[in-house]
Length: 588
Ligand code: ARG
Image (cartoon, rainbow, N blue to C red; front, side, top):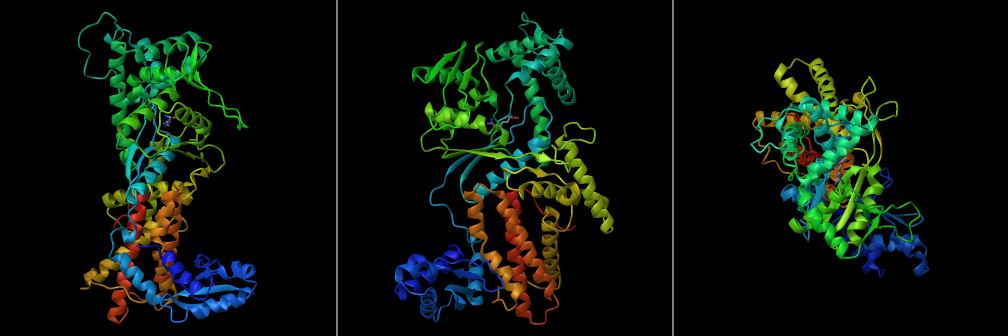
């Protein structure tokens, strides 16, 4: 279905034309004075000069041309020349009936289906997920779902950090602790054990220990660098050990991401492109893009217009080892060959902005991406505590994602059980669902690039601009619908009616903007727009609910009309929270 504002504007353009004015001035917008009118058009103001007429005269002519319009119930020319408009309730109701009867509530399928890769998550294996990883996962998942909902062909890739120095550090530390393991015996030719020589918790302790040592001990760091290089060069024992690290780590990551309702289509990592790096380097050399600098290979990416520092992009270190950007560039090549995307979106901490600028420039310059492939960096801000500093544990350490999630779960459980008597198991299940909404909404309702304060008390509140408030509203609607059905009503047969009350019409107007909103959220890569919309919708619904007898309404067709409106409201809210990556419980 066409967007309602578009249809309204079309009506207005015809009126402009009929009155002898250029049609394109008939653009209608949502009113910024909702106390005066629902919609407005400022075209008459803009035309005054060109036609040497007072704008109010033009506006009056337009009003006359709108005589008999089925779209507007009010069209007023007001000084100095504005057009104040209200939408016809009949027109609005018929638009909503169209939405209710269409797939995805009338959202149009794209003219061209785009192939989009969303690179998000980006955990580093063997390191526990911390609160910084939350944003990439939560925002990336939503960006992916919005694009899918729009009808595009989207691939989510986790792009794990599984190939760099951290792997060398872990191997080095393991060797110090258990030198007798066959992985460290160069003469060993047998089969390596199937069982990993560590558990996930050991692994998570080994990495920080090794990292700490390497910062203090030069010799230790040299060993780790060498181990990294040996691993990358294919040393058999190191590869076998690395396989164990990946397997143990990925099992744990999958559990964590599943708890967050985050799903990746591809579980690739930096290591996945290892084999194509030599070919890429050769290609860059052949193309004359690469130069040597102190033994390392670099590509210059500085441009004349640069005002900021733009260091060259290093492709191989002097010891021949690949770097973070080498793998990112090779991954772009791999994606080109295997997926051929129209767009690649990176959801990464905004502090990596300069880095991605280098990578993108290098990829363009060396033509390892097609000219028409769009590379987009969606950099997100920091999660802060109430003190305004990066979110930490009470002891000042890095907050692990798991403990953060369980804190919110606990808080939610307390709230749910203190409200009323509920079965323990059900309460736990509900608390989990609501807690996830609290976390995700708390994050997604902010523009991604902004820092935000992780405020557990606010996020878990049932009132205000929060996830639980949205869910509470949905549960309220579900409960009314259930009661209607329990009393013998047929909710599926209920038909929308022309609105009679102001709150009812407000809610309908909000619903009518759904497709435009979703398109905007997609085009601007902005999940916060979906949040703002459902908050507005929840408010509009609650106003309507508080001022209307729904189930006690005596006029049955009127009651059925309310029920149809509730169903539509709920359906849209459900699709919206689904693209945000959370769901609503049956009760709470
Ligand atoms: N593992 C990286 C980090 O923790 C994030 C990866 C982001 N994605 C990418 N394609 N570089 O900083």
